[in-house]
Image (cartoon, rainbow, N blue to C red; front, side):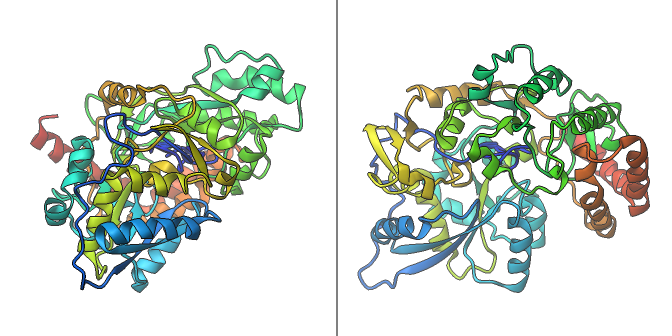
Length: 504
């Protein structure tokens, strides 16, 4: 995982407060399913006719651009050329830039075939309804059978938009669970106990101790994308409309008007004034460099089974975590990492063949994730690897790249890792809005105005940068002026109809 939204989940993750992303979760490697041979030749591969001209695909994906992408893709293309007569050009866009740049490029008709989408970056549902993506139902049946067989059916079912699939979801953790992550070196150095930590308020004595013991350390590492953990299910990611997780009446509320949000904002204000957060936190787009430096004490991330191993391997020093929430299956976690085919692609069939191979062939999947064997990593057993020094030039966010259940195990991972994933997924509790996708076509102007207000006021409020006693009432009023109440009324109408149709 990486920090906040960049992690596994949503996995990661949306990890909202760290150096983004597992993702639920994050920025490096998962394990190879013991049941799938590591060098398997997927039946997805179809020997190309000798006279067929190779197809070159352009793939836009999210993550900090890596120095060795071209080097790795040269090796990848030798394999895909042989398997499906296709080469791929990967273009990585940084976490904070991805949505805006993709909006511009898609609108302008920039050539592309495959693109990353999800609930928290280049919004999947919204762009599917806009016609940005190729409808995949027919292509999946014809060229994606191996991918469909490899991926948990719940991902395909949960990511349908108006009855159709427009992207291939990553096979990963289904629920989203937030955790507090700790730099274990500092826990050990200052003998700090994390037992009993779960709520935001419970962090206070730990933050106080680290601030007093080592003032040069960032006590609470987060960025402008921080959102509190609250017992609510959001109607739209990055919008203030939600229903309570334990709702009986499915009433949609403005989250800023809830007592839970007020308490969280007040606590963050206290922490900010105490110097536990960086002064510039509301304008910080990433904490990746800080995380690499090790000069931080705690942050928050979206987790997955055995995520501590993943984070520790990626960062190069030990990480431990403790739950900040329960494991809940949200729309945004099911849609937390997906690869779509551009509606303007000139090669949709070839793109589907590649995505099919990516999600079913361990050799291809691991090459794209880990890089080149004996350059970026070395095998220490048939299905377990260890990162080498060159991995610093190719440290990919594994959760963004497809089916993680066919990737190598990392050194220290247990052999039953994927069994743990299955247990984790089965134990997840469905959120009340799971399966409900709001159609905002009748309130587009209001939604745009609400989003504009959010971009102006949200970060400073959530991170405690401003006084909530003064600025929260002003923010609520601005949302009302933007038309939030009208949007909530429309959401409520659609939600009530959905409940009646689905016997909720």
